[in-house]
Length: 511
Image 1 (cartoon, rainbow, N blue to C red):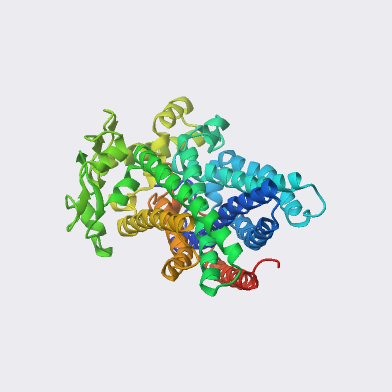
Image 2: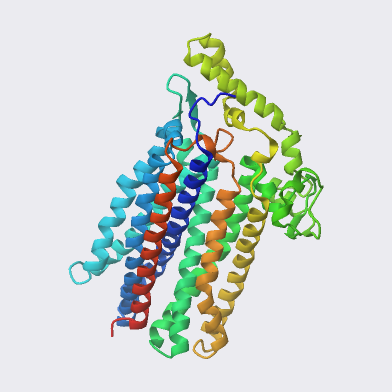
């Protein structure tokens, strides 16, 4: 089938994906900590504002310094990430045009400048503005960072559930038909709340870990007690909210990305009253089994729970990999075509677009595009295996994320028990667990994004544009060079941040 866009070197595709994954994962080391610490420092300064106690001011300033170190490096990686859309993914950027660019423009113009303005007041305005204005600046800094995350997540959500747009064959671009549909899509709203609450959780884990370090060292005990209390409260609330929003995420994924859900669950053959898999014998060499077997071996599951999560009914039909390939009728009675039919209709759309561009029977081809454009991306699919994400990675990353999420709920509940009923300074075993929360929180956070992004492959835009059609016509060698350049740069930035943070934490608060 003729490639209407560009014939791209497979090496370019692989290196472009690797570079974007590298940048995204490094960027996501900083962003959730920024969002989480914003809540912690805001609560602490609120306590200072209400009580007037100096120890709360000291605690607030300490966590603001930690926030500032992380904020600065997070901005740097984010800027590089946005530039990569133009350098390595120009076909994608051209194809989606104003739809993807609009939320990012709003993020840059409004949210970023908002947080950049108030962060200066927060750091340098302690003795220059009133207590009330300074408190407002602290919260507005966090709000600005959160709003910034909103628009970025709107753009990401649109890629996974494209709404509020239509394809214009005259320009060969998807164009926005409703900004509100894009900005307030159910997928975007749920993605935002799940991501933000997960970030609060990571920030709480970081706060508790630092407090645990001080308690083990018997240093800065007042700061440690306050940080442990605030961190545990924020952590417990955030972990419960993350669990709730995660349930909504599963429901949205079931509607918009059934193949991702099948990969998350290792569900090869679907049906009614499906069980939720706890663990299963899924190995790296079992990828092709999904087209042959009914289910993985050595499977432990909770009866009917997957149907409840995906359809909100205990007996609802949940499609597996084979059902999605062969075609199925969902729990609402909607018929979903087979992969072969999608491929046929996708190729019809590609041919219709080609003929339209050549001036052949424009009205007839326009109608074909209206009917089949939603399957456009399938026109570039050669076989079923290309539509199935890496099941092993998606399956186990999802279980790591969920398992750690429930562990955090337990740990924060125990910490709060000691805070209010016992002496939090005494149980060294609990402090050691607290220190371990930092790496565990980052593992959970990164696992969540692995599920979201690996699970939606091969799509850059769900059903509309596969990854190998989205990249720029550049040499694979050039992209590989920048990959290693960014690897060195980001690793150096991370090392610098960790070094500065460790020195600041060892130094402790102002005395």
